[in-house]
Image (cartoon, rainbow, N blue to C red; front, side):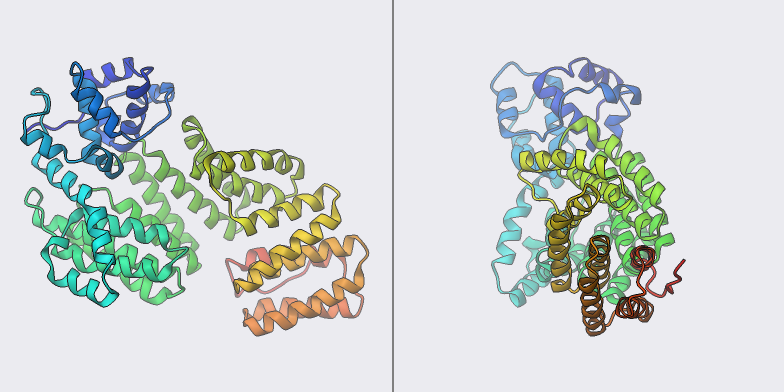
Length: 486
């Protein structure tokens, strides 16, 4: 059976038809999903793809099968069904259509394409069935029931684990643990036997990520070490999991305050995303957002903002998206922190419009914090005080000590500017009491004690408060950093 990648002639033909509504959108998706096909259109032409990317649908397939066959259109549909789980879910079992002779005679699909397509198509149903069982029974099923030994199911579990890690960490860990059990049991007759190590590596990394989000950093590190051992056994890139594993590992390294290692992992992940995933821009943008956060915590502000601008340029041709809104919210945070209030105020309605159009909600506490800074910088102190207090309370309730301290100190700058010195004294005393109870690091606690003493003895200056704000921003990435006022 033949592969369905574009050759140079079909790549040029597809580009020539880029303005057709369906082909144009599917073309962009194909370029972003397959490195081999992406290479068939010269890179300087990618920016000319005018249609917004979208997944294939069952309606697309019905249109091709019930009208005069369009070989190029059909080739794109079949190939997307093989390489994209979302397209596969919409298009159904193309392997069955192939076996029933309903596909155009000029095109066939590989046995591997059929195997993966069927596995991925069945995965959501299998996932529902195993999760409908009590947790203990689900683990027994993973160990003993062969129907769950599915490549697509392991991928689906990893994807769901990553998606719910922030909202339901227990479920994220259950899913990743089940994937870790199943991955070494999966067999694919169309791949070398050791390729299962690539899938197992993927599962291990997601188990490590699920442990990371609940601050189990040492066990998380152990999972990533096991993932690295599996990678060293195989070093295959059939499925391009490696760049995603490196991205997850960088998140752990950032939580461990290993910023140099995190930047190295992200640099390798970004290079792989560019080379092995063609122009898969969403993954590249995700990695760049991670890099921005690492650079911010390591106080490399200029390069951090340049990284956000790079992510914005990557995402801009495709129009508004969830990732574009995340980039924009981080840009707003940066501009408000660095004092460019007019530009931040200009961009704020753009974020509100984008998230409303997409049906998304930006990070509410982070946005409140940004609004508070903008209000302070544009002459609305009462609004600023109220918003800082809202953000402060949210961070305290979430036990996020350094962020709560930062917001409290920024609140103190507004109170100080308004001559509300008694309120500053009360805030300083409250902060010291609260953060002693939260057991934040000794150096940070010493800085807060200095703040409380200066406020109580009326020796507090605006410069000292701003030095403390700068210190706590840097101390998020280096908790043992001593406070050294200027």
